[in-house]
Amino acid sequence: MELISPTKSVGACLVLSVIYVASLYVWNTKEKRDHPSTILKRFMSVFLVMTISPVFLYVFSSQSLLSRVTLWETMGFRRDGAIVAFFVPLTLTALLFLGPIAMQVASGVWKLYFRPSYWLSSFGDILWLRNHVVAPLSEEFTFRACMLPLLLQTFTPTVAIFLVPLFFAVAHFHHIIERLRSGMDKRTAVTISCFQFTYTYIFGIYSAYLFTKTGHFLAPFVAHAFCNHMGFPDLVELASTPNPQKRILQLLYALGLISWIILLPIATAPTMYSNHLFTTYM
Image (cartoon, rainbow, N blue to C red; front, side, top):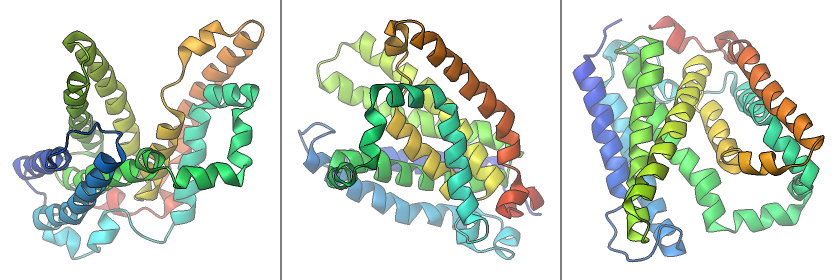
């Protein structure tokens, strides 16, 4: 297997991440990020970046790799194991959110998901589409499907899994600009951005792990969309819940985390997903 140099793979990922973030600010607009016109313009930007990203992977990849598999297979777009790659990682990620899901059941929020009107209004809401479809789609496509295969041709899977989230997490630092523009003081903006960097990096590790182990784009995409839907666990609400309900919820939080840790290597075994790419060329 012909390896590509770290300079090429890391350099290509760095340039691609800069292009992704810069594309969000090419528009001359005074509207905030949640304004429909801003969202639509940024949709155009990220979709354009998605057409450019595979070019980086093709140009900088080893020719011996591309002679054995197609570019799309390298990016995780293939039929074998696709159904498993959708449902198993989604279930695994939901298990991690066992506590928050239990809180939704207790509050009755979960009933909304069984109403067609909820989904019709959601898909008609451009903000919902950005958070649950376009953002996970464009970010996983660029930062996982296009960047991670490059790094896997240079570094060991473990190094690549911990390296690629740095590009992903740092790319989210651009939100600090919008917070400052909205009038937020610098200290608060920096604190929030550092917190966002931390949990974005942690999620990036998980997402990269899913992609590497399953060899499917679907796995990190559904996990990303689900995490965006759930948001960061509301620990303040949990703390204010009266006993004995709070004790039960705390137990479910712990049970979900422990179960997720135990099942993670089992539920992501490459053989389940017919993944031979990243286990054979490394």
